Image (cartoon, rainbow, N blue to C red):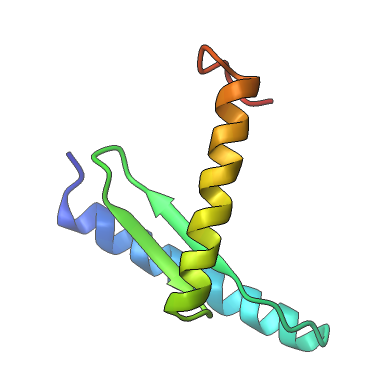
Length: 81
């Protein structure tokens, strides 16, 4: 099980990465939606994003489609390469 200090550290790291991503994208003149997600072993999710609930829902649907395709391509949970 993850403890609160580990989760706090992961939150700090994702916040730092999100800040860097936003800065680099802005410097490049690129405007895109993004989501950063880390899932710790006990299933706790840590998220940083620049999109709203509707876009998150759209992304969830896309991830479900990707997962379904991956399950067909990797029937025995073979490692991703």
